[in-house]
Every structure is written in C-alpha cells, then in structure tokens.
Length: 140
Image (cartoon, rainbow, N blue to C red; front, side, top):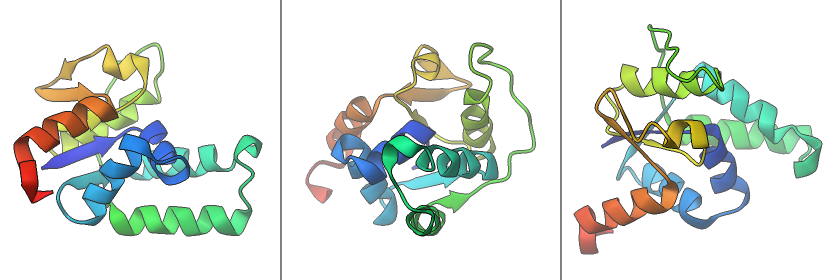
C-alpha cells in the first residue's frame, strides 16, 4: 500500500508520537510504503530547524537521514496547482500522484478538505490507522 505523509505528519511522528509515529513505524516495518520527494524532504528539514523544536544541526541531519532510509523516494514529473491557499501542499499531491498512492495522510486543513483527490483518499492519522487496523486486523 502506497502512502504519502504530509510534512506535519513526518514531524509529529518523529518528535511527538501518537498515530503519526505509528504510521511511520508501519512504513519502517514494510507494512506500507511511505513515499517522499526532494521537496517534501527539504520542507521537513526546514521545519525541524525551527527554533521552537530546539534541535541541534547534527540531530536534524540524523533525523533527515533516518527519514531517507525509512521512506521510498519519488521524483514527481507533474506540477499540481490543486491547493491555491497553500501552494506547498501541492508537493504532497505531486508525490502522491507520481506513486499511485492510495492515501495521503495529513493534519493540514487544506489537504483534508479535499477528502479525495484524483482517486486518492486524504485522511487524518487517526482515520488512516482506524482504516488500516480494520483491514489488517491481528496481522499488525
């Protein structure tokens, strides 16, 4: 199952836990394939560098390296403009379309308001986990 996590899910999963971390763990265990593009990775690194997180440059490099190892890389060929309110959100859509993702996981209102885009479901982390647990059952 191919997924693309929005940057806020990546940051939340690494720094705070909860459903976002569970999703990243599913990817690291190979239960889902989480795709990331250079644009998403760049934004992820920029967010981690914000002073409010208090991370040292070496910590940021280590976290970014971990993300590269646990995600599959995609190079989208199409530019999207489906979310005019926040153009950066289009990078998530581009990665999702390029990988034929089944799900986009996000906490971002602009993406969640799409509900479904190009046949790809846009879900919150909690809704995604509920859906996956229902499909996978005891195999998790």
